[in-house]
Image (tube, rainbow, N blue to C red; front, side, top):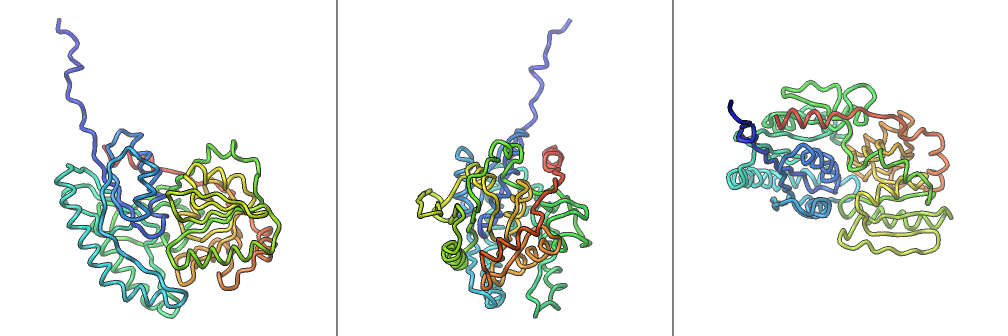
Length: 369
């Protein structure tokens, strides 16, 4: 009789996965956190690729993982109604960055024997030599109202980039009860689409232990300059009109927490994911931008919120309006913002009180196998 030789059987090769979020605010990086966690849970080897603050944040979340720096898109924001025009003028530079990152990816694949690439809104991070996945919540890119007639052209260009990838993941629920509305739903695509459910760095399993209220209000400042600073200055002025105990998270200086208290307002520069989740859970209501990753975080934690879209950013303006019409969140524009009024009006809205299905575990299992 032969002895047990099962230990001699060849072991399945661990898949090497490159995860590459766009450095445009921190939202693309934060929603890659649950993707990376699930990849590690399913025994994949992960390499992180990005630039700027997005890369810095992921290095702090996953200090033991290897990383590489990608070419920066160098997107610069202008204020208000000039933003769409500014973005149009920056298109040639963005196209160069897309070409550069595509060439950089081919070298990375060869040097690291990468099997799978997961790109969050980096259009150049696809390859015919690997499985390639694109993450986005915007199948339909919304132009400014005055340029609404260009929407079919923007969609055609967007689809032209995405179809180079093997699959597109939408971080939302696939049914009628969803968070992204017309941005991702009711759109026929020439490529495969998977709805993963909302992707948040937070876990609702920890919500109960953090549920004791410490603050009446949490103000989360986020986004690229110069609008991040404009929002911070606005909220600092408005907070002088109330006496509610408040936590203000500035969303800057990732390497230095910098806690200070002035009257009823405690200010911190930056919090880790775990600390920020605890802060949000221990606050009665949240004031923040209407960026999609932040909306997913609020939905997972089932919080009440007041949304202030970044001026001129049509996606955020749409999401704020969409959630207001659904009576989930009250929203106000930045130049008309009145904190006292917003707090009064928010009582008429339900907040995020629904549980959304999450399929990321099974989708990653299918991807790896």
